[in-house]
Amino acid sequence: MKGCFSLLLLVFTLFSCKKENAEINENITKEEVVSFKGNSTTKDSLYTFAYLPTSTTKQIVKHKYYTLSYNEKFEQAEWVAYELKKEYLKNNDFKRPYFIEDPKVTTGSADWRNYKKSGYDKGHLCPAGDMEFSKEAYNDTFYTSNISPQKKEFNAGIWNRIEQKTRYWAEKYNDIYVVTGGIAKDSDKKIGTEEVAVPKYFYKIVLAKSGKEHKAIAFLVPNEKSDKSIYDFVVPIETLEKMTGIDFFPNLKNLKSSKDF
Figure 1 (tube, one colour):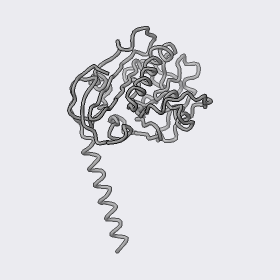
Figure 2: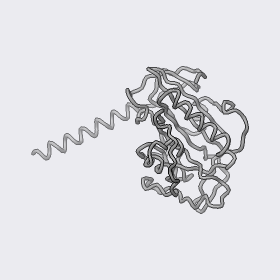
Figure 3: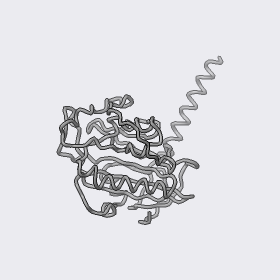
Figure 4: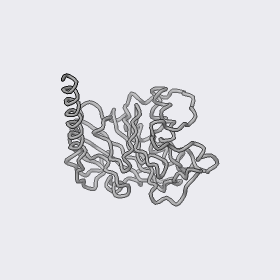
């Protein structure tokens, strides 16, 4: 009898959690914004499921310091999301490990050899440079689920400048949330035997919180060399949502448009 009661309690708990998550992840209509105010379901940390984007593939992979949604069709993540705190900003001289396949990707992440002699860099989505506060965190960025084909001039140029600015914002706001990915659905270029898609564009969204106020800025950058200012690539979050089919912050309400970041 005791066993039956425990089983009933477990079923009720799972049903309640499922119902609660469904309510929390209910889509919210958005205005075209690059900055907004809203209410969240968290108190202390930005790194929580409440800030995760929706997944078009339903294959969400959780690592200790970042989460991703893997797209098997394009053999890369459609987004990688992580928290970057001011105290994470370290410059440790860690030895770079080899890229390895992600054991948590059930469909199998692409082999690094797809990039060999392809003419494209193995571009980090969650940068190794953002995770130098811990050897474990640093090494975790070298899963092939966390890379995407990037032109060398793009990776070392405009994209690197945006990554550097992101670290500046982490210091300014003490704690930010970052979502990054490539837009590969219209790609006409593939590399390797697994046909890893080469994104035409990459995007990055940075979210900051101060009290009840949330601020965000979004970038959409062609996968090519550019000497333009990073601010020339600022777009409304809604633009990225239309291009990707992803709802980036479904649990933030009362959005207001502002370009102040």
